[in-house]
Image 1: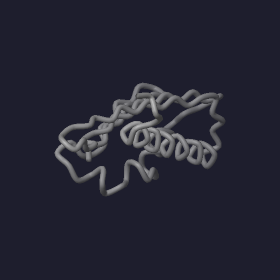
Image 2: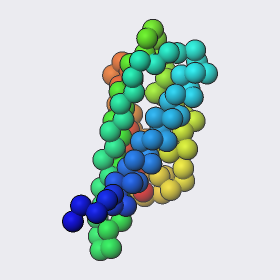
Image 3: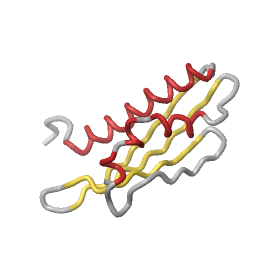
Length: 109
C-alpha cells in the first residue's frame, strides 16, 4: 500500500550504510580521498514468515588518486562482513569479485 519501508528494505539500507561508512573510515586512515561511493544491496527473503536468507552487495568506489586495497580493507574491519550472523548459514562468507575499485560481496545468513 506504499506505507513506508519494509523490514527487508531497511535491512539492505543498514548493511549498505554500515559498509559505506566503514569504507570512508578506511579511506581516511589510508590517506585516500574519495570522489564517490556506490553501494547496492540485494536482500533475498524466503519462507513464511519471510526471513532474510542472503544479502548481496555491489560496491563501486572512485578515489581522487588511489584505491589500493580499500575495499578489501573495508571488508576486513566492517561490522557487516565480520558479524557472526552473516557467517552462520548455507551461503555464508565473503566472496569478493574485485575489478579495480569495484567489488561484489555476498553475505549469507
